[in-house]
Image (cartoon, rainbow, N blue to C red; front, side, top):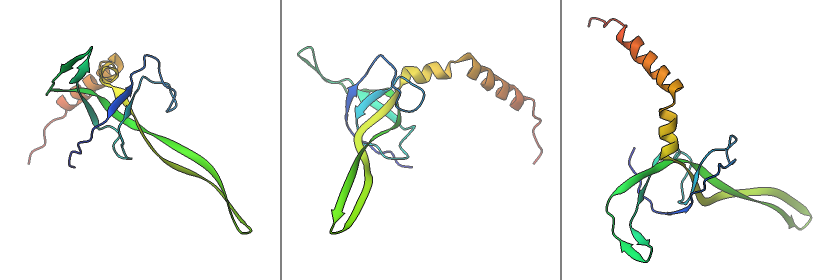
Amino acid sequence: MQPIVRQGIVAMMPDEKFPLVGTPMKLYLADVHVFGGNSGSPAFINLGGFHGGNLRVAEDYHLLGVVNGEIIEDEHFNLQLAITFIRGTAAGNSGISTIVPADELKALLDDPRLQAIRDAEIKAKRNVPATAH
């Protein structure tokens, strides 16, 4: 479990929800190459760079959100070798990743239904007598 530091560019921060993974959800698209297993990893952003013609130097990073997944590109192909035909689909990582915005995560954690579950778990743990060792 070692951190991996990569860099990329936020490609799109749309206001509408994307229907990429079943239920439409608010996602950012980032030009960041991720792999299977990176889902749930934090994605940070440095706010430095050119803004309105001015160069801003920033050394602090802010949580943008968490990696949700990658967008796969596929291509159907037909290959003929002498009298043999091979048909298939090739798929590969597009280099575009989906990121769940931090404010969406906070809204989920602040949901009263989840808070009720957390409160019930805490109450149940407090009522369990400690075992003697």
